[in-house]
Length: 351
Image (cartoon, rainbow, N blue to C red; front, side, top):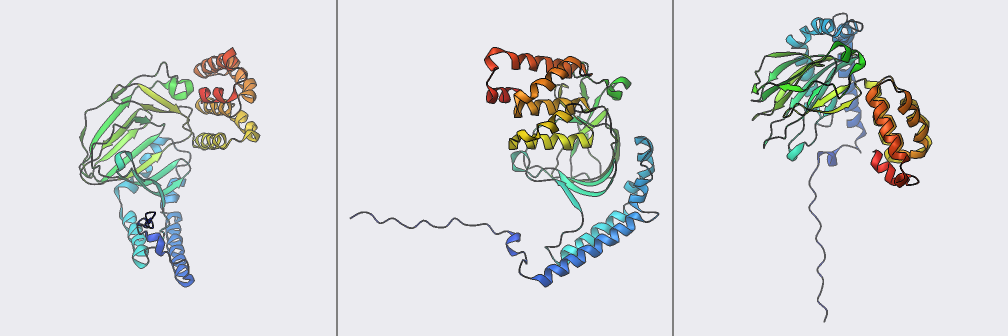
């Protein structure tokens, strides 16, 4: 007699709060929406009042980053407005845990080693000014060393709770010509890093983020920061350095619109959309040299044949010497006999 096979047992399913969302309780959902809308309207009225946060930010639309930072700094030091905002957000959640306070989250999730990654809430944003509440979670194990990143603009960071974290500050020299758009990777100064020091609750860090950056070594408790950034459009790229060696690792477009278009082009390339070639070609003429080269690389990976003519034009007369040199080297690679007629392999090499 053949042995009897036992029936497979169901895998245990972990409970989720979303399993209990009141999808069939229309009255409760209406109550939640009404409460959230009421809070959102109250916050908007407060922010757009003559003495409100968004009104203060709008008044600095044309100010230099240092001047805008000086004018908006009181919003870091007097935090009664933030306490009231968080109290009303918590009241929404106490009334119903499925309410979503009208605050935009960013970052978070799972980082290296399974520990939570840094994230936070956008408290206010208009133009090139952004105010956020940022959380650096404690780490259960030693986190990997993160790159030192330099972004054109200014940042003021008020430490609400240090959590026992260690602060590592980084510095890089920058010439006026580089800041005006003549930055090249080959001439970039190395990054210099200060020894770690304890982060202090109540202190405020004022950074010229084109030249100064920081990383945190998480402590035994979460670190909570109130961070004000002023980052107007700049021809200077975002630069990432290895703090251990001081070497430049990566550059990318600092303009937010260029960054959004770069992400969109990468998505189109992953989706295999040859009908979007014209969008890639337009971005190869961007004012931002990092955006131009990113668009070209993505176009080569998408369609090497369509990329040939704009790549040749870039190799001949792109105004940035390193983009021009990279285009020339890539054009020679595409024209070499082993790669001619081999689209998929060429895409992999170019990407």
